[in-house]
Length: 114
Length: 115
Image 1 (tube, each protein chain N blue to C red):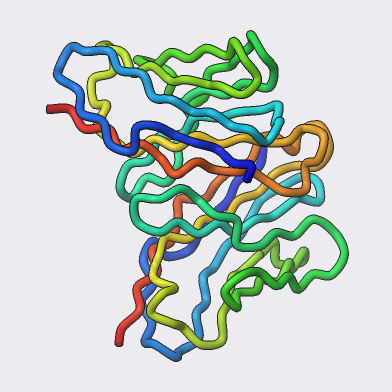
Image 2: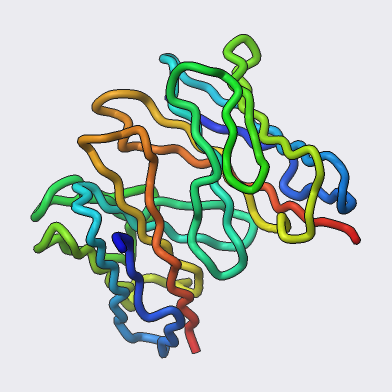
């Protein structure tokens, strides 16, 4: 079955550490997105990519980095510069050639700073 | 610029009662409209969408929404709430064509169901 896989489901980070969240899709979608979700704040866009080797900052990119070396993969690195990284992170993808279906979301990664 | 407003961050209804979650949008062109549902610690799942044609859209789990252009609304309803409907619901809007990839989400409405 096609879909998006996020791993790990739970991640613990020590202060000052960089961590990388994985997002893989086998839907052949062109565009991929990273959102951060905090209680009562909805979804906030971190980064997005519409093509391999290209990506754009979203509304809250500071302290995060991404890469898009393959169409299927869009990993997110939470750097030590992100002062409050504890949150639920969601990855999504979108088919640019068939826009009627909206985004497909992964099941999320919950990151906690310890 | 597009925007979405969900009225009420938290809605509580009794089991068996009508569910009404309100969504108003702002768009300069006819939009695509979506409702997504999120259960705890899970991703968002598409509930229903309006793209063109019939303005009353039926989705999964007995939900439906009506696109009202004159009111710029896309309210979500379900005639009879079930305990399993307890979740967070997000309304979303996008342009058509080349801008369809930029979906704007509302802030969400948490639905609670009272026994």
